[in-house]
Image (cartoon, rainbow, N blue to C red; front, side, top):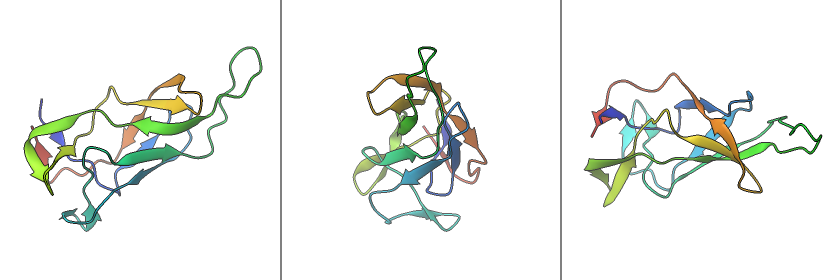
Length: 111
């Protein structure tokens, strides 16, 4: 399934509104001036206020980036693509729900 390649400037947040930051491992390819992400790169969340019904805080702290391009490699690694099924996760690895992608770049797509 083709999709936009994720860059460091792609907007993302957890389902509870906590802003996400995408951290590229390298800067070998720029798209619209921002480094493209590859398999193994990270997404983090800060400021999620989610609490489970029992009152225990379970803020999202990590974004699981799951869709790798099959035909586009950057530095020998598959590029990461925007995926509506990517999820945010708490420090205890409890899924918080699907991330919300905002303003992905549209110049470069991959499969």
